[in-house]
Each structure stands twice: as C-alpha cells, then as structure tokens.
Image (cartoon, rainbow, N blue to C red):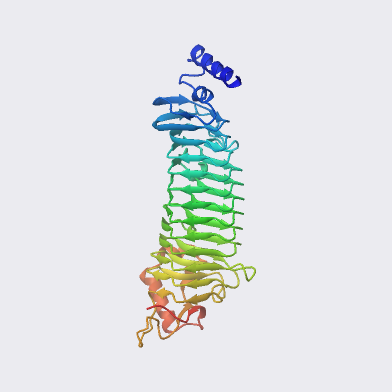
Length: 403
C-alpha cells in the first residue's frame, strides 16, 4: 500500500509540475510500481533521477534507457540485495567530491551491475560495505578535464569478495580500493587516467589479465599483503615518476606473467622491512622502459626468477648499492648479457653481474634524464667501464642467466 501511495505521489508531481521538477518522466515512479522480485523494462527514452532501489528487482534498459541525474547528487542508489541493473545509461551526477556524487552507489550484497554506460558522472560506481557483487561489462568515464579533479571510476570502501570483470574505465581519476580484501579484478581496460589502480590496506586481491595504459601510474599497492598481479599488460605510462607497478610495505605479493612495456619505470618496490615482506617477480616481460626496476631501501630479499629484460635504457636502479644485491636473482634473461653457453644447456656459463657506473648521474640528477641514451652519456658509460675512476659497486648478480 505504501508503495502505491508513493507511486501516486510521483505520478501527480510528474503531471502537475513538469516544467519545474520533472521535464523528464521520473524513473522512480516505475520503480515504485515494480513488485519485489519483478522485472522492469521501461520504454526506450530518457528518465529523470535520482533513483533509490530499496526492494529486490531487475531493471533492464536494453541499451535504450537513460537516467539523467540532473547534475545533482548520486543518480542511482541501490540498497536491495540481489538486484540487477542492466543495459542502462546513467549520466549527469553532481560534482561534489565531499558527497562522493556517483553514477551508482551500491550498499547491498549479491547485486549484478551489467553492461551499463556511466558518462558525465563524477564517481562511476561506488561500493560501500558491499559484498559478493558482480560488476561486469560496464563503460565508465568521469567528469572533468584534469585527472586529479575527476572522481574514481570504481571505488570500493570496506567491500569484499566482489567480481569486477570486463569493464572499460577511461578518463577517470583512479580505481581505488580501501580496506577491501579478496576481490577479483580481471580483464578490465583502465586507460587515460591518473592511477590505474590503487590498493590501500586491501590484501588478498587477485588482479588478472587487465589492460592498463596511458595513465600516470599502473597499479600501486600500499599495506596490502598477498596480492596476486598476473598476466596483465601495462603500457605507455611515461610520467617522470610513474611506474607500471609500485609496491610499498606489502608482503607476499606475486607479480607474474605480466607485460610491462614503454613506461618510465617498470617496477618500484621498497626493501622488505621484515624477512617475510618479500615480493615474487616471476616470468614477466619487461621491455622498452626507461628503468625496468627501481629498488629503494638498504637491502633486498625479493625472489626474481625467469623474467625477460629487453631494450630498457636501464635495467636496475637502486637508492643504495645494497638495495637489490640481496635479492634472489636466478634464471632471468638479460639482453645485455655478454657471456657464452658452451655446453648449450640454455644457461650462461658465467653469472650476469650489474655494476654501478655513470647511471648514478641521472638517477641523482633527474634533469639529466633528458640525455639518457645520448652519445655523451654513452661515452661516460664506456669510459667508466673501460677505466673506472673508482671500483664500481656490484648491484646484482644472476648466477644462472638464460641465453
């Protein structure tokens, strides 16, 4: 009975005040008339928001239905467990960062958000204490020209065990997970944004087979243990301090089978504070970057096996000569390895050692980075290797380099 009165109220308002409040028919009216567990398929067209869904239902727009938030607040707010939002175009949210104005705010469990388009919204999809949901095949973009002034395309806050798959997230600020463990993030495209993905106090997330490119940074993990970062493709992140993958104070992180191509820095990682705070870097292809890997801190301890380093301006940069020395380097392919394989077993007969030469110049003076690869620095490299002014320090040694 209450729902009927509410629906009647919306209908009266739509008929009586179209020029003031509802120049578009209100989608909330159709929602109030849909029974619990029912399926709503509105006629094709544009409807006004905001919309609040408090009972389980399916809303299927078939790709022909638009909800316009009118530039104020959040457009769609889902509170009902088990609901499905499919085939809608959700546009024109408010622009308040304080209120987190979003295309869709999800505060429910077991919900499917599928094949929707979110455009001209500040935040795209905002999950707040939401569990076991499915975010599939959506297209998300944010308001604003400057990446730092946009909202997150996807934001998870205290939200766990969600599946985020095959979404296209373009021209947003970040994808952000805060205190959100155990999510599966796979086969998404995250492009032309500030930070592809940032995880803060969010352990146990699995990030697989995503395309992340043309951002300032790729994936940043902070205080997030047990991350699985596998089979992703990182490319064209060229900002001076940008890194395809950056890990800080996070233990037991696995970075495996990824492609990291044409970035300023491929991987940035701090030295482990405790022996168990190590990173596993395995079977990655890291190529055409200014710096393939940058380690900072006093000592290493990470496991780095089976990776392929090709055509990077600098393979390893360190904040101190010992930062990478204690890592477990075994079985990597180095394109500048100068040894032989006389017994044809596929492993170099001598270790691959990397020493600290003039590369320190442009690491300590970033302005000289402009000249990296130029004839003058190549000459300095050659002279220092031919007749070093002082004994160069060993950065790393791989006892079994792949040929």
